[in-house]
Structure formats: structure tokens, C-alpha cells
Picture 1 (cartoon, protein in one colour):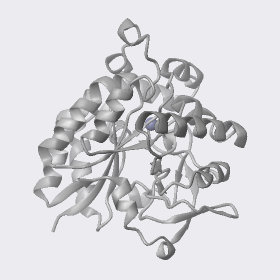
Picture 2 (tube, rainbow, N blue to C red):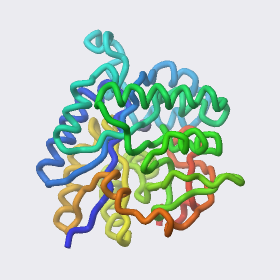
Picture 3 (cartoon, helix red, strand yellow):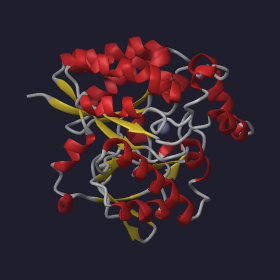
Picture 4 (tube, helix red, strand yellow):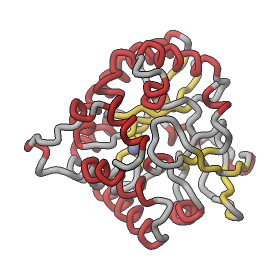
Length: 303
Ligand SMILES: [Zn+2]
């Protein structure tokens, strides 16, 4: 029997939309995998976001390893007319669905949410999500099933706004198993499908830029998980710098009886009433700017 691996592709830039998505669709077809693409429908102004983050040490670690000048074409006029990621590329969004994959929400303005999630008001955040939902519905003609906040941001305000959307699931944090979450005194009604595999880029930072060590670590981590395996990859770093290793990783998974799966299909079969309730904590994470949400301490993720 094949074991499902929930694979989420975060499309965090216009460059990722144009270049990364074709790569993933091809490699998933090769292995017969399914997956979910998490797309911010609005802009993600990484240049102004970078300027705002420059005083934080994590930014410079990111900058050194990410080599953004190879990922993003800062001065390429071809993209000047379409700065909106999902909204600017409706045909690509529809192609993803036509190819049999899920499209999920990933905020509206990605950089704005990751920079301001912990200080912004409920009205402001609601507006972001309403814009995202409307753009999704206008593009695909149906309601979204799932959402993941940019940069694993989560707090009570985000939970309240999200619950009002009535989504089938959200994937906003690191954790060990599907659950419902309590944040402060508030019990969220939206099912969480948390990530339990490290992101590629933080591992690259941890291993001093060594891709072979990163790949071997990911293989061991995936093999060590039980029945629940849930991972995120991006159309930026992973596609530009790590695509050969990623191809090998997916091949390793296929050889070991694993198959990529969509989040919505998985969430559809969950018995919501019997899910455990977990408390959310905010923690620092290698290579990430700002704190990320988790249902447990990272030691068990990194082990
Ligand atoms: Zn993202």
C-alpha cells in the first residue's frame, strides 16, 4: 500500500509562478504525485520587504544563502506589468487545477502579512483574507478549501478571522499530527494540517550551504515519520538552487512506497470530532525572520 505524503508548494513570487510551477508539474507527473499549490493572489514585494527587514540578523543569513539575485529578476521589465502573483496569472492558476492539483490560499499580500501579522488589527487582516478569497473565486469559480498563512504566522486574531471563512482545513504551523488548536482561551474551529518535515532553506542554512547534507537529512526525516508526513517546498529557493536534489528526494519517496497527495483530499477524510486539541506556541526557527507558530517544541521536528 502506498503511504500519502502531503506536499505543499508555496508560490511566493511572480518568478515562481512563471518558472517554478512548470518544473513542479513536470516532476510530479514523472512520479505520479499529487500536491497542493499555495498561492498569494496579490503582490509580494520582496524588495521593500527586504529593506524593512535589513536590521534583523536573520535577514542577512537569508540573503547570503538565498542568493536572491539568482532567484528574482529585480530589473527584468518582462514582469513589470504583472506584479500580482495569482491575480496577474489567472491562466497559470487554472492550469494547475486542470492538471489535477489543488490551489489553496496563501494570504493576499505575502510580505505585508508576514511582516505585520502580530501587530495588525482584525479589520486589516480580514480585508487581506477577503481580497484573497474574492480573487480565488473570481479566478477559479469556486470556494477555496484550504489556506496557509505566509511564514507560519498564527495568533488568536488570525484564528478568528480564518474560522469565519469556514474552510475545510488550514496549514498555518509546524506540528506532529492533524489537530484543532487552542490559542489563548480561543478554540479554533478550523482543522489544522501542520507541517512535520523541515523546510529546505532553514536546513541549508543549518548545514552551512551543504545541499548533500540537506538532502540526506530530509530523506532520514521523511523515513522516520510514521503515517503522517507533511512538507512544504517553494518555487523560489528549492526550484532555483535545489531542483536536482528535490527530484532525487521525490524519487526516493516513490521508491519507498510513498506518493504525493493533496491537502484537501486528506482533510476531507479526517474525523474532525475525534481530532486532538493542541496549544499553539510561537518560536524562532533557523533562517526565518520573525517567530513561527508550532504545536510543540522544535526538538522533535529536528530530531
Ligand atoms: Zn510563502
